[in-house]
Image (cartoon, rainbow, N blue to C red; front, side, top):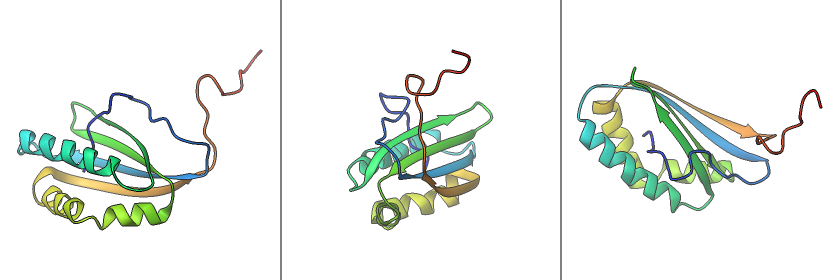
Length: 122
């Protein structure tokens, strides 16, 4: 389930290591309002889960979307995966809202921001 953008477009994560769940999806043209409502519900639910650190999400006019959620541990990711309401949203997503998707889990080892990255050429 792709989550809607938060008030902060770039997640404020702690110092690594932590984990990223990268959800790349291609939306169908079906039930836009139902999808938006479910995405908002899942966003609110994810934010209440232990170990949730933040989320970034975008979707293009071509219906391709990428949502990256950040988690403190693999255990937190697995716990989120098993939340009953999230399982229901996943089922509906496969049946109705997604033409295709890929989910990847990665460990973040390094992180830089515009203000903390080394300045090249100075």
